[in-house]
Length: 262
Image (tube, rainbow, N blue to C red):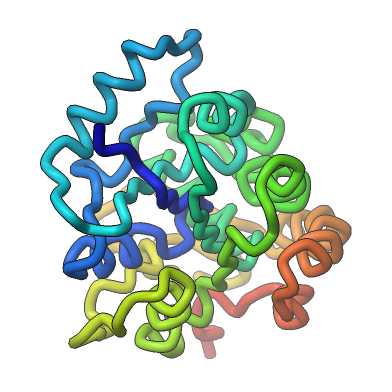
């Protein structure tokens, strides 16, 4: 039975879709379709028969590719996903975790869910911070505890941690770290065309919002709101640096988001 042995665990809104598309085109990687099966983040108990059905549905068409991958970004932080995956997936799978400056990620996550009517039309970012992990821009942008849980049962050498800002700056190097980690050849023809940073933003006076002339109601982010959120993330950033070995020094200040208006 063909089974997965490579997982892009998350995080949401951090470049996982771009990386999955590139790896799916590599001859040494078979990627599930869709990219996010959400199998191990199901809330009900899973059986061996469920797992066998999952393998047949999403990996049954794999041939001799050494890597069989999926990219459900819920796995990193949703309670229970780690233990379910560990109980069914044999051997020592590999994991790739893409991370993003947490305030930038929280804003992108909020807009993504607001556009899908998962929040009230007039909801503010601060209204949603204490939602459950499925819909909280705060909890889905706290990385350290989630990473620590995964490292409790899998060795550190089985993980690759990547930064979204590296993808924006140099997609070829970003992807090259992944192919080196997997021991496969470089992916050809890497471009920045498919790098999706989310909706373009603009400062309207002192308020950050979506740059759109067609939306009457648009989410609005006050600088004070973003600064408070940044402060809440700083202890988590220190722990994340220790766990991942990444240099996150440029994440301790708010991103620009958009050019300042004159």
